[in-house]
Image (tube, rainbow, N blue to C red; front, side, top):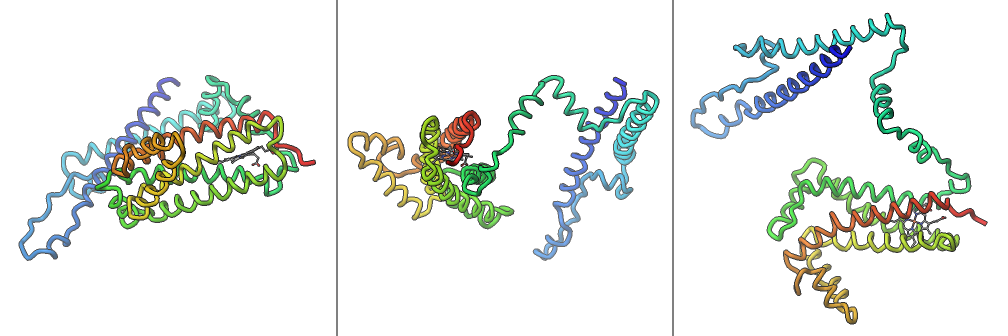
Length: 318
Ligand code: HEM
């Protein structure tokens, strides 16, 4: 049994490596497209040297020394996996143990070690009271959903965005024009940001109108206000990132307003701009706030917000 398991894992590992090789060599082989270079220039182009290509070996095109190795590797591994499956079925038949799919076995294996099914069940299976199924009780949940959308699309944008004065605007143009679905992801990030603010305000109004902020839920109101400020700060810091004229001047005016606050204004201004003027340093500062500080703070306060809702339940309407 142990041996069979080892064979399976070894087989799957080899198959994985073989698959990765197949993909890599295939991509490489396709990088050269015959005909394109010849059309561009009248100079005689020598034929490209063909790269070794795993699927060519298996199919028998361009056979060379690697061909039998590649075939043995791929078909041998498949054979091992098949033998293991056969062994498993046979052993289930002889031992008369009920069949358990691999997914259940993996889940059981994890459960044996972590024992999280009970607490997880308690957490996830809590029924929603029927009065809380009206749509106005969903506004907080919709705000949370939009936050998740923002996190996901934000990570995708961060793969291509560059927070420097020289490259920020160009990287946004690149996302808009070159990256697959880049324009769509950016548009979703833009509209969900607006949607999140609208939904947070609507949620706050629902809580206010129904008096759900009253004891013992005051701290939920307080954490809610902090969440709302964080949501607005997300918008404010994100606005500078495209580094175009509108971004530059909006941030200049916005930080000027913060700077006009009596006593602490200058300190806030210097903190936000990382200097007296709006410069590349400001861009870096806003980027850091937008992708690290504010998201982490938001997650922390959301956890507090949600934990309290779990403890106290949603307020019953009178
Ligand atoms: C990022 C923003 C926010 C998220 C994701 C969020 C999420 C939620 C969720 C899912 C609930 C459960 C009930 C419901 O949805 O109505 C809730 C309840 C509550 N929220 Fe928020 N919220 C946010 C902002 C706010 C704001 C801005 C306030 C007020 C200033 C606030 C105050 C409250 C209070 C007092 C409750 C308890 C309501 C009750 O027990 O009936 N929240 N929040």
